[in-house]
Length: 349
Ligand code: BGC
Image (tube, rainbow, N blue to C red; front, side, top):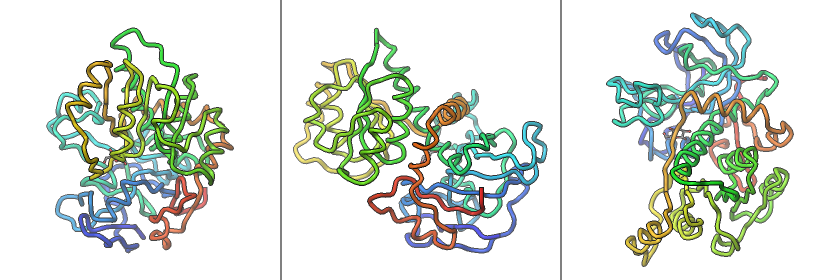
């Protein structure tokens, strides 16, 4: 079968290659790939900055935002042939650490977790893949191709849970949310915040293209100027860019008692003259919390499924701006200014 692979830490090594059928050790459920979303992590892996091959292998099959059709449900009692499924990304560490032991692999403490398509386990960018029954999440077939948005929605569902957990350390009735970055994660964060009944604002560099209209269609407010000129102090900021300057400006802009949740993974971003102790003093004097959030456990997968089911399909459909054939994977990995979510489509829905 064909698969899109990389040699981790080797820039430019991505290729569409012939591979043996997925190994039975990867799970009893056999799935035919429908589509796989491309995200910033995939681009980092292809650029040779992140990613680990399975032990003893040179190649890693890319892809962690899956959508597939069950060919053989194997030992699963919940799935049947033809069901649409999405594969959970992370597996608990083998020790296991206390969090992995209770199913919170997203909070793994020792870093020995593994991730499909990212860390030591093959991903989903192959014509067929296998998965353990407990890690195959059934999705509503009526979502069609939009089922591919489930994984990024889980990341946001977890981030939101973190914000609520932190906020509830004191009396807290948040009203305003700022989302920084109107990419897929930012727009899905705005969707969830809107579903929670909040006054949602999204800030992004783009002042044209699909983003402003998508934000407005949610009933949220779009900003393309600097954070400092927002004109209000958000109770919650969901930071989805990973850009140093935006992180710094977010800390400066959040309301007293407010929470900033960092979801973006950037690097570098040196900000001259930044005095860390001054930033710390600002955070201390305003009881702010900056919380990082990565990955998602089963609870978040469930919540994300509910959120997608409640969302307006026409709106969701506009998030998938491009679908490429596997042979054109290289184009799929290059983002154009109007791209939101690009998917690689292996089969018709
Ligand atoms: C994925 C997460 C993963 C993280 C770090 C993200 O792109 O959505 O599931 O935990 O990368 O590897």
